[in-house]
Image 1 (cartoon, rainbow, N blue to C red):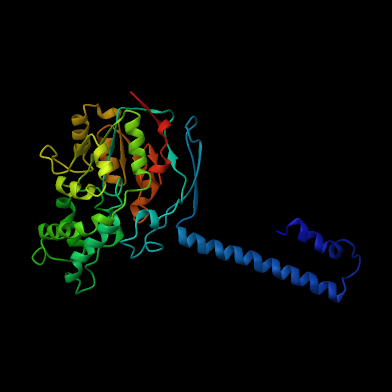
Image 2 (cartoon, helix red, strand yellow; image 1 turned 180 degrees about the horizontal axis):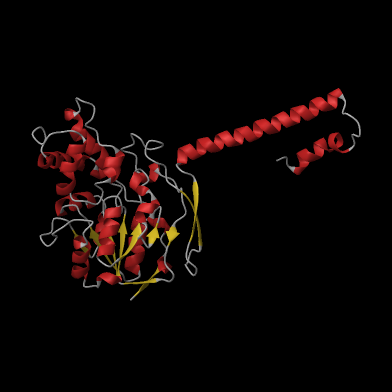
Length: 337
């Protein structure tokens, strides 16, 4: 394609010839054609490079008639190995960009009484430090080069209790329980993590959203798979957020019989808040948390982490919202009961 001003430059050459063009004119036309071919090739090549960088390219999603966001255009997040291979300490805010439009899958404002927040990866940018600590503990057992936690493997443990994922990680890394037991691995990991807590920032939009919810009269709570002591250590560096929470529901509470994707943690939080599960909205970054919220008959806003393959929006098909960050959540999406 040649824009109009450039087209005008070649009009004298293209409009009046009734006989064969002169050698000079033919050379000019040939050069122009060659430039156009090079331009098309360059655009095609750069498009391929861009597509390889961002993943599978742009996708279109059209909502059902009557939805609040009738047309959504999104670019899928980068797949592991294309942008985030080897990334551990970088924060989610630094590691990801707004690669897709938020997906708002509701027809009208939700009738809500309480909002429950997962902690790690939802309120707190935890996964970068966690990934590094999990690998640091494995380094002494890395003689074969196999004992390294990848982001694919990390994605399978997000939102779950350590007692459930530790044995799986060691098995995938080829480490025998006789060499390193799951219990010892968790113990070493938990001892390492406090080094990262002081530098862990809150996720974008988290503090402002909690402030807005409290100002509007909603009940708010942390509902996390982490142990209570671990939650307290992490949130000690964010006292303003902790003070606004009506309750903190940890995963080691005796009444929690099963971790996510079971709904136990969310249902326990709802009971302590004195609200019905169907009047709760849950913010979660993992498919396991989403499954737990839905199993508890609650609404869910998903916040996929672009560093992990599980960030594929297809993994969050049951969510009522799929957001890049809490900055994208608008208060008019909900109404207080």
